[in-house]
Amino acid sequence: MDSITRWFTEARFGMFVHFGLYSVPAGLWKGETMGRGPYSEWIQLQANWPHGIEGAEYQALARDFNPTQFDAEQWISELVNAGMRYLVITSKHHDGFALWPSKVSKFNAVDATPFGRDILGELKAACDRHGVKFGLYYSHWLDWEHPGGGRAHESEEFLPGNLWTTQPSDEQFETYWQGKCLPQIAELCDVYKPVLFWFDTWGENSVPYITERRMDDLICLIKERNPTCLINSRIGTWGHSKGDAVVDFLSMGDNAFPERSIEQPWETSGTLNESWGYHQLDFGWKSASELVENIIRTTSNGGNYQLNVGPTGEGCFQPAAIRRLREIGAWMAANGTSIYGAGYAGLPDQKWGRITAVATENGRRLYLQVTKRPASGEVTVAGLTKLPKLARDLETNEVASIFQLSVGEDLVVSLPRHGSADSLPQVVVLHF
Ligand code: JFZ
Image 1: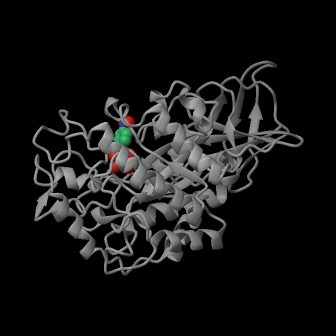
Image 2: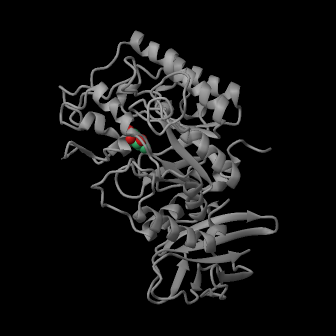
């Protein structure tokens, strides 16, 4: 039986891209840094704090949207070189701006901008050329361009007086749902045939809008057009009586890693720095080793890591993003067999790192992901008492010696040399 989620769980590592009108102001509005929170894609609410930006004024950004450096081939080459297997891009974020020539709304990258190119179409073609799976983010609840779209909620975070915190009536929302959301999703299914949709809700405020009926209709519309298209839990499953059973995979909170294995396919989406969209003043970059450890963290618990890039308003990946992607890619090129198709090993937590496991035809392989190499160069594998046929460093092939103080005791692995200055994790494979 070939499950429709198989490619997804085998892939383990994908790229998220947040790209839209907000990539142009990139966190600054008329010289002022946007208020509250690091997410540049929220500038429409958070500039001119606490008031926000008037709809027409924000939407006029479309006239400045001209990412002449955008090169789908280059983006997808970086994705492939990083060892990623799929793309998920913001077809439409909360601001309601579409990256494709939508017949449903002229507020899109072709009809409303000097750029005039089909960004999704060019990326889809590049993905097809490289054998990369093409997935789409779509903001189904919030839409600040359509008068009936969901707004943010009044809270500590978004104070009263903000233009974008007054909720539509259910009737108004229905005009958005029938008039923009569902037809755009149908269009995306038919034209771009995404392998997955990544939807987003959170908090109680989405529940009155993303009702069970609406969720069922949306899922039905997608699955009728493409039965193998995957759907994530942030569609709003916690407001559905059948819960996560109605979706194909779970999405964790932003940069949130579960500390146990989960049966249903799942992913953690994370940022390279802090913002999802490009932010000029976001200097909080994670290190390459932290990012590689995150891939190991998700894989060892049976999940995926979806790492975000926020291209600039010109359509470029920042040098800091490129350097990290390439370092990750260099590690993946040498150690990818411990990630792709790998999963939970069923062993307890280890002091020195984590373990990923792959089932093969003639036995199984365990991969010791040594993220904290002890000075002694020896690691005890808690819970493992069976001697492997062979153990070696995955990068160098140097054989590791293994001993056991007595039969039935946990194995001790004497780690091969690994280059003392190298900070990326060492992987030792055990063949059983
Ligand atoms: C959402 C978006 O608002 C944000 O712009 C970005 O696209 C991100 C991937 O998703 O932000 C959220 C959504 C939910 C939570 C946190 C941030 N949550 O439930 O913790």
